[in-house]
Image (tube, rainbow, N blue to C red; front, top):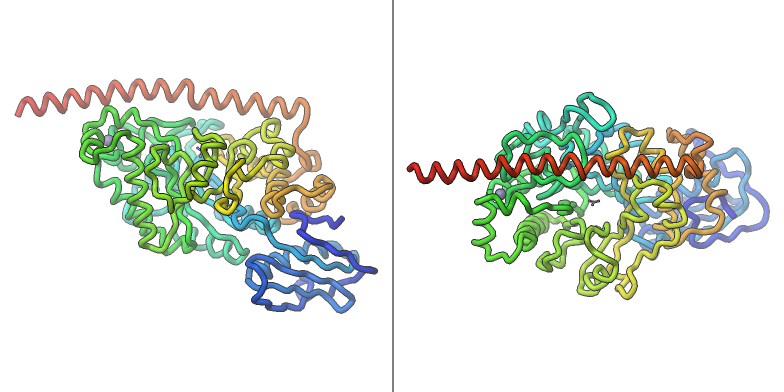
Length: 497
Ligand code: ACM
Ligand code: ZN
């Protein structure tokens, strides 16, 4: 078995061994044969006494053929004569990096793109905004990065943390990804996970006074005010500044975990709901989502949201759902798919990389059924693996969470299943990842086991309790009291005139 991850679809090993010629940079030389009849992303690689040859019908096909050839020839040893016919099972093989909870430098993001390229992943989803930080320069709204990109302290250190990417830096990331055959999807969260925006522009929340960039985690109560027309303008302005940067087709507008408590109190939101004739807050949210999707569509883009945006059944069927399980089980998902919805499968269990190794195990990832029972597989675009960074403060910790899991996930996305001998093949790929700068100490070549796995799980669960149950509830009670007081003052003000 060749030491490759993802393992190719079809491998025929020939007689004898060959030593491929190299160019002046030490890269293996090969003959390039363009074949327009080949499916997008497929390639054929042959290595014989006459040298190496890659046949493909697209730039991505050549990139994948080259990646395989580089992996095969990475040691100085001659390799077996080989013919590989390969191509992916899923068109969408995504990896999501949350740069909002902790900021990752341009160099760190590029390093992660290098890892993706080796593993033949083809979509980088950047989760650019959340309660804990806004990470993209928007010229029309400078306070987003002056205020919204910084928090006073973090879970790990009583020290200011933050950062953001300039528009030029983001262009650099996108062009680096494109050179590696990887598309980039920006995510701007709306209307939930919006605290950093409200800290910068309080008028965009229902009760924005005193709201700060969040220092702890969990689902926050301060969300975008759906009764304020400036909010829709804000979203459109932000997206308009992103169009020249993120030139790929897909845009993600969040939509998960929206709490409706502030809307119940907010006179502007209540009025908007009444005027729209919406039966629920979910339905009102759906109108906003549909308007943004129409705007994106006018600009040649397709919209993605998390799956619960929203359960009212009013969300436009052209919007792609990223299924992470938020409030939706597999059979409800199958019903939605069969009603015409396209989806990307990102189930929290087992596809979230931040969850403990004892929860999202290698076995769970390998055995997970990607197409829900009874659902039309044609509507499934592919798989995406997410690294949320509430507990991942830097690149070194990110790598601990990623490897070996991301390698196994990439194989699942490429083949639709995990081939035999993954641990043996992984040892080889780990060397390649280390050569690209990954910090994979010998003992981490496989996931933590025994006591280390138990500690990892306890730490995660303890932190989750800290995020949501205590601080957010107390914060919400205080904010609710303040909101009611503000409502009373407004009422009194009206009576006085
Ligand atoms: C999510 O994990 N809230 C998408
Ligand atoms: Zn409101």
